[in-house]
Length: 493
Ligand code: SF4
Image (cartoon, rainbow, N blue to C red; front, side):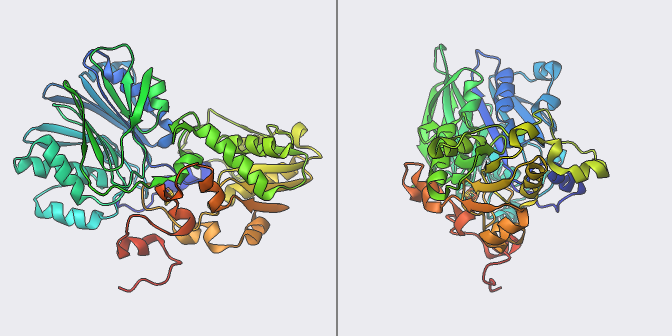
């Protein structure tokens, strides 16, 4: 989901308070279950997908021809309460948690996006980013559309609406609209007639199908990750395939392969960091994958030390794997304050100087006098790593060796993840030795690109790993490239 607004002051402040990780773009959910309280099930589904976006949340429900919608800024638990949920009635629910990918965090960009069509209302929840928004916008203006938001998600909804207006059914309209869209899109779409789940032909962002247990006839659930199925007691059925549309109605679930040339390119960063470790991807839990990349990292870059620690939360499984492979004991050296959410209140100067301690606190008695290997999943800008290393040394660590369970991030993402411009990526502008010096570690090593992909046990060609290589699987328009790829060969205008 793309915004066209510049960054806001609030956004910079949030970034200060968060770790300098790439940020996920969104979580989506959908359910068709007339016998159930779809609103509450959608709420809990979003609750499980909170890690994918914390800026806004929304739910739309469909009851016959009527749609009910509520969305707001903040966490799912802040946006909804019992009385709001009771007003959202229906047989179909879709939901969304949002992280704005280029800055504009405001209520009219919150999702689901809602548009009217001659067949009734349509609500859409989108995870991913289109790369052809300029062309699509022109096309939609030519078709007489007005925009209520600055998101590409609304553009997809409007594209479907214009196709419906030309006399097509929901399905035909949606498929025609998807052919106008280029980029990454995993969607849940609610209509008065049924629920759609869709993935772009590369399947960059995940989308899974589940079934509600012990209910006859079978009822279906769609979600970005399997953790959102688990929380409502739904059983994982399968993934929506790249280039597939599933249409869920009273008749059951029908599948349409709307794109004849799908070419799977799942975002490898979902596996390394974004998705929850208890979610299943590629047939196994991401916790197991992250353990395995930790083991691989130890095989590639072992160093003598007394203890392995992980940067909470996402660095911990790889740290445990590193410890298992190396035989160096694992311990918790950093404790995360789990109840710190995003805040717009500026910290005091003193707090600012103490840096990361709002979120992470080192355990002095564990660290004192020890040679530490600290495992993290990525370094993006390097600011947070530097603060953590200083905190470890201040707590008495005699050596700090950093190991990263992914290769250096050298290129920005255009498919739905906020990774800054290329010049802000420390891995794009500095060598490993220079980064080690900047963050103040005794040694630094990254996982190899080959090691990262081999450990998936899948064909490496079925993943997008462009932020480590610059090999973008979905072609990018020159203007978009220029917006972030500042270190590439100059693009001819
Ligand atoms: S560029 Fe990186 S973050 Fe973006 S989809 Fe590809 S692997 Fe994922």
